[in-house]
Length: 170
Image (cartoon, rainbow, N blue to C red; front, top):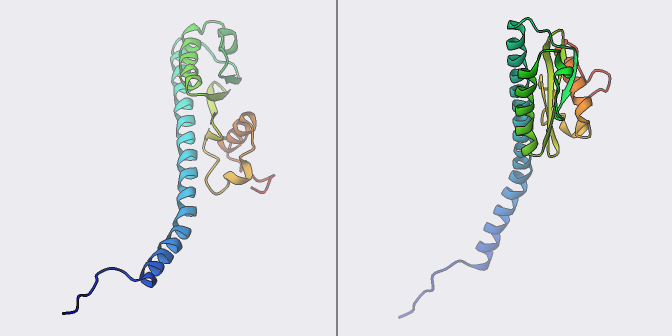
């Protein structure tokens, strides 16, 4: 009686490996795009949270008839002189918020104009997120060398209703 061996032939194994290789060649680049997209979206979301926290603090000051000065606040120690004469509470609130980002190794900056936070930018690792959001996975390659100040300025330009990339073509 003749017995047959069960198993795969070498050709069948090569075909399967080739199919897996083709699928990997297609999927890996698209998966890398999703990682960049999610990191940028996360940074933009964090910047929006920062702007909302700053505007919340400004609202508290406004209820006490304390005006906030125009300008930028960054992650260094915020003093009441940066904000207004009687703004110890907002300074403490913003410093606490910035300290949370510092613990994560991030840099943050907000810009006030007309008594409100008009834009915010945060940099965590290689990714910068802004509020209003200006960076996407599609334009990130062209602008990944932007500094935190450049990003903040572009976000303010968008907040004012102008295309921040009109001059650069990006």
